[in-house]
Image (cartoon, rainbow, N blue to C red; front, side, top):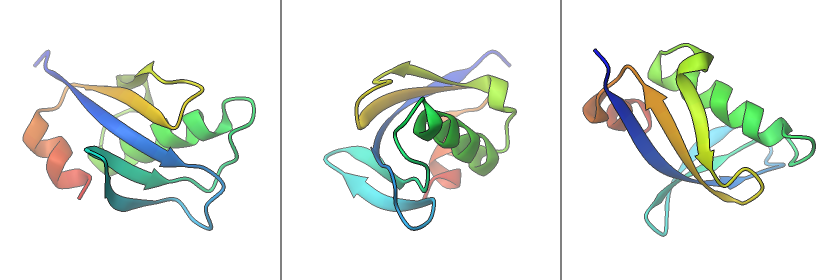
Length: 88
């Protein structure tokens, strides 16, 4: 299975805890406990998504938005329905 899914994510760094917070302007809003310093928030985002979807961290990558709140994340080896169910 060589399928991959891209999702639009809106992050809120330095939150009290890491969690999904619904939708924000068409993107999945994720609150991250990590600060936006030295890529810590991006690393936390990748780890959180990989854990929720049930794939290895190496299968989740940031496509765009490394220094922005709005990001595009690509997840390999899963279908869109699996990702949607895991990130609700």
